[in-house]
Length: 252
Image 1 (cartoon, rainbow, N blue to C red):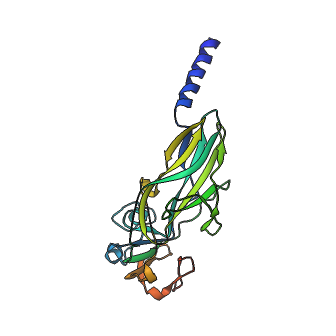
Image 2 (image 1 turned 90 degrees about the vertical axis):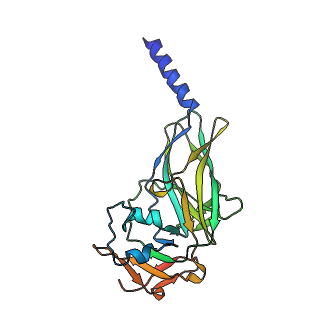
C-alpha cells in the first residue's frame, strides 16, 4: 500500500514537472490609472451622467465603460501572484512584449476617474517598469512615484511553493499603443512564456501618451461625491507636471 502511494506521488510530481513551472493569479497591487483618454465621443455622449462605481456595464459610465472605450493615460499595468510549482528553482527573468501596434495619441477627450482606493498588500510586490516604445524594452525599476527608474534586471527566484506578487507597469511617452505581454520564466534549463492578463479581462494592453500640447477637445472629471457624475471642466482646471502627468486643480 505504501509503495503504491509513493508511486502515485512520484507520478504526480512528474506531471507537475512537465507542465508550467508557475501558477499565475490576479494580484492586488495595481489599481489602474487615474486618467484615461479617447478619440471617441464617449465624453460628450455621457456628460452629466452618473458614474456607477459598482457596475461593469460597458455602455454606461462605470469601470467597465472606462476600460472598454477609453485608454489608460501615460501608463497601464497589471499585478499577478506568481507561485512556483517545480521542484527546481524557478526564475522570473523578463517580460516579452508582442503584437505591438502604435499610432498617434488620443486627442479628443481626457477624463479623471473617481477614486479607486487602495486594498493594501501584506508584502511589497516585486515591481518593474517598461517603456513600450523602446526598440527593445528592458526592465527598469518602478519608482515610489510610479515612474520609470534605472535599469533593473528581473531576477526573481522562487522555490517550489514560494509565492510572490509581481507588479508590472508599461509606459508610453509619444504614441498610443496596444500590445500583449508575457512573463519569461526559466526552470531546469527550459524557457517558458506565461501570459500577463491585461486589465478588465483582456489579453491586450492599451496605453496612450498625452496629446501634443495637452490640447484635448474636451476635458472631464468624474466627481468624487457619493453620486459621482461625468462633469465637463475647462482645460485650465487641469495642470500637467514635468512627467506629462495631469492633475485636476478646479473646484471640488
